Image (cartoon, rainbow, N blue to C red; front, side, top):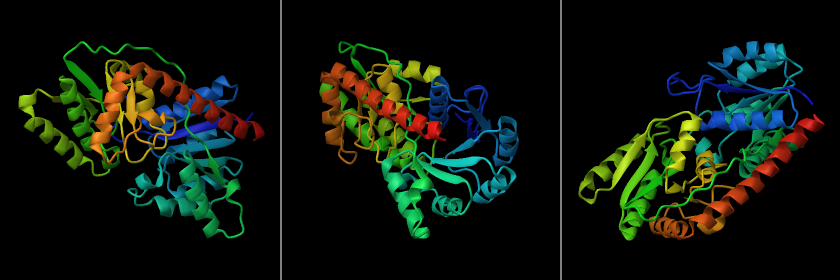
Length: 349
């Protein structure tokens, strides 16, 4: 079993007060850390490091001497990878993608960088979704006719720890706490979900408390948060309100999730959705889109149809225990398969 090193980039807005000491409290860090801890539990020699920039990578791999260096997400210039490969020719470099193509379309350098990575020796591209695996394989095969993409393109799905809680939904209170957590960006679809939550609360005859995280505004998400603020400001007579939570360390975020009545993750593009898994892990029912690969289809909604989202919220509210139990079961099945894929790859390596 070979030594594995996960390398992440530290958040540019890193703040020691609100972020973990290792450098970040983002979903990207949580995702990598889940895999790292799982591999350690399975007996592999694995470690995780957070770098301020790619110039620190040489020092980190010199210290750890891994066989596999996994770069989480697109942040290292291909020219830097080529330089590192020459300095450390025995290391297999794995660039792990965390997004599907609709999201990467908003990252202007992504196709250029991935194409350049193909030209580097000992560099593998890992996708965390089957669709991205297919598309990147098509890219590689078209660039390199006659070469087998299976050698250079691999599938590394997300893993999530199976630590679940139970919670009873309190239907007696006069408020309804709906969580729509996650970074504010257009593909997360916050505004449509806000309208669905308002309709949902109206039909229940309850005051809506719509919970978001607006600490991270990404990929032209400014208009989204402005529209959300203006929407709830105009609804002041209804007593519905939006509650904006600061980004917080994982343990505190899980506690916050546990205080919610129901969760919304009806986004346009997902490869896993850790926020949804966090809500389900705390016994909170969720409504999501078909984009979430582990979610139960019965509680999936059309992200373009607020009425459909409202209908699924009502269904999840009426059958909250079934929602939680079936989604926890489905998430367990998904992550068990992920574990098999990861351990098989590094065992044969």
